[in-house]
Image (tube, rainbow, N blue to C red; front, side, top):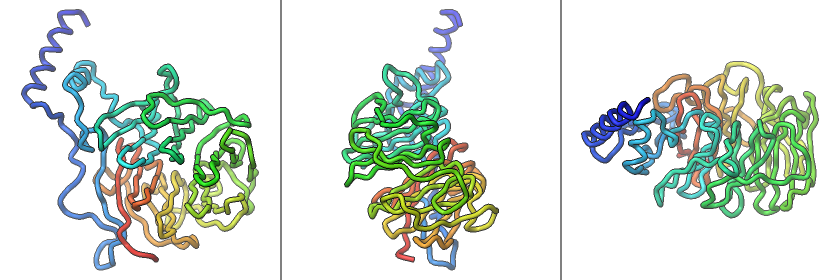
Length: 343
């Protein structure tokens, strides 16, 4: 593009922004009619709250020059491309996005958006999981770089952690606030490693197999406040639970396409009632189980409307029982809320 063409295009962009006013068009992601699961006449248990793809969907405005650059150069680094993991730290949302080669940080209170890379702006090619630390820090696993990073509050870079064992393919991560321990799933090793505050390897559990406590390419992990660990055992098509010492407790799931089956589980989390939520990308659904692994409810299905999913990958539940689902191929995060009582 020569200078004349660039100037002409910039003029068109500026005219377009002037005609549309200072606001940028956002996605209309919520409707007035409540969306609840299960459908009437059953008592509702889960409600749709909102969805977001870019800062404007969260009420975060971007500057005139940012929007002009997006239109001029045909890219928007603030928009989600392929979200795979999400955590909420108060009013701040972090979304791991391999499509953007980084982690988005949306600050709903102060306003603003950052796309966080590694030191010196080095891209993160495969950030696949996030975990919330004790002091607002967020841990990030990058399976391609075989590294776990940490993003400190307010930092603009993800800093690699020095851990006491060489990782093959780190995926799921979870943090134990009381014990200051970091749990890391190493998918290629079929194990879960436990690291201390200084990165020292304290324990490991699991090996390849189909028995209780064995794994076949485990991927994600969730730790409850009570210390129960849930691990998605992907190619055994199940979820296994363990106590805080890594001792096997229970399992549920199986290969199939019905309620309670887990053919391609891509996220696990629990609410404060102990319900276990599993997002499954092959079923394009979010399934809910009780703390004994009994199937309760499925919601979703393939589609682009609110409450529908397209290859969902990634799940987080906050202390307020707000449920965040990375709707990967719809390039958005959908937010739901559990509104029922104990099972």
